[in-house]
Image (tube, rainbow, N blue to C red):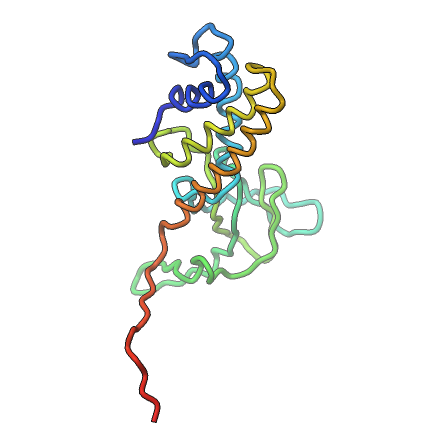
Length: 207
């Protein structure tokens, strides 16, 4: 069961010796610091890894305005996209049995194109439509894994160490803890979505 925003912040506050809060809207200094920093730090941790709960596949809308130079098309990135991971050409879809098949643009089989992210757009060459694999902004904490909760709490603690405990050493310790927590969370998250590969235990007889 994933923790709430308040529970995540209280975990961070406990590590830096702050007073626990009941709500992010509390009038305490701790609540005000958490309220001011929680969203941006959550997004920063989401951006760091390809979290399975935050990955999505989208088809960005093409824009009528063309890039000034260098590329021949640009596409709008939705506002909830934090990071663009991969882009492939979508106009190679083929009709199979009366339905559009997109299997040829799957991970590892993309039609390669030149692309860059520039601001809130993707610029690309040789594509009238594109697909993109992205990291999206997830605000619902029930979608977080318990390990991600711990990593996020450590990231918040790193930023709270100075204003709450006035300790550069504690901030360094929290930075070290964050590195450990996010590595563990990423390792656990990375075990998902993998196909099991079986190896034969039989012996091959060579004649």
